[in-house]
Structures are given as C-alpha cells and as structure tokens.
Length: 106
Length: 117
Image 1 (tube, chains in turn orange, blue):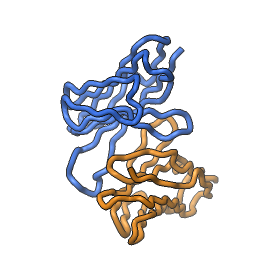
Image 2 (cartoon, rainbow over the protein chains, first blue to last red):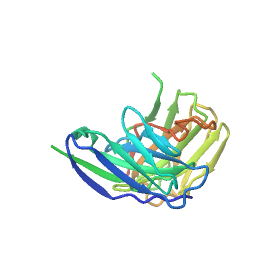
Image 3 (tube, one colour):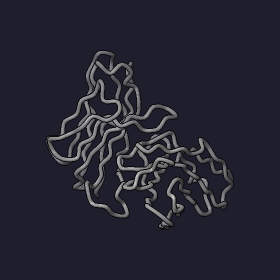
C-alpha cells in the first residue's frame, strides 16, 4: 500500500490561501490521489481527487507534479469554518492516516 | 433525501456484551465500509463489502463481525472478544468499479460513538 506523509498541523489566518503538501513516494500507477476533510465527531467528507497535473472544483485545487510523488491541496481564502482535519490518501484502497489539523485564526 | 444513516448516535455497553451498530444507505452503492476512529487518530478499516453476501476483513477485524444480506444494509457487531471497543465508528459507502473523477469518493454516515462501561 502507498503511504502518505503530511504535516501534523498548520495554522492560518482567515482570508489566506492555505497549501497542504502530501508526499507519497511509493504511489502506484493505478493510484489516485484523494483528499478528505473531517470536522470533530463527523464522518470525513470528500474534497477532491486527481491523477496528474491540476484539478479544480468549487472547494479546492489539487496540484500534482509529473512524477506524482507528492501533491498539494490548495484552499483559497480560508474561513473559520475550514478548521478541520485534512487527509491525503492514495489508492484504492484508501488508508486514512492521522491527517493535517488545520486551525484557522480570526 | 439520499444518504447514509447510522444508529444509534451514542451507545453504551457493559463489558462482555455484544452490540450491533446499524448502517443503512439509499444511494444504491455497491460497496460499504466500516471504520473505527480513536481520539486524535485516523480511521482504521474494520470490514468492507463490495457486493451483497460478500465481505472482507480490513486491518483490525478481530473482535468484530458483519453481514451483508441486503445492498442497503451493512450492520457491524462488536463482540465481547474486542478488547478495547470504546471508539467512534463510521460507516461509508461508495459506487464500486468505474474509474471516474470521483472514483475514491466514499460517503460517510454521522457515526456511532460506543462507550464500554
């Protein structure tokens, strides 16, 4: 199984762009890169998924370099409600690590 | 409304008792999953099922059992053999198969918090 490494925690001020980088050196050819968001006492919520280059949706952007050994989730202009844990996963199958705890400060 | 429901939201159990957690989905998804989450930790896979009447063990299946008699339902039983069952349990479902932009999109239920007294 491909493993991922991401920062344990990050802080940001409201209105800033936040970039969370994830490394996945052993990613397999058939693996997709997927990001989830989780609020306390709730189930995770799918944010975005990509295979290569750049993917953008109404919530975030995902940047994947050509070698696919890392990826960066970009959250534009965060608000207090974006405070959550963000998980980077490669697969399938999906393996949830501890994620990155993002704290947005007013 | 389509979605996944889990019941109950909070569950208390005495040591030595079996307890069953409910998970129902009306999304017409083929695949269903059970995860366990401990405080400050990520999710760990207990069991998963890709199709009715078939399921596979995940990383921490010991002390748990499941059934998949209907597409919509995937109940989890926490048996007395599970040594430390107090945790937050999450059920999820996904469209099996086809590669698409949401290939890894799992839909999660609200969770059941189990406490063993």
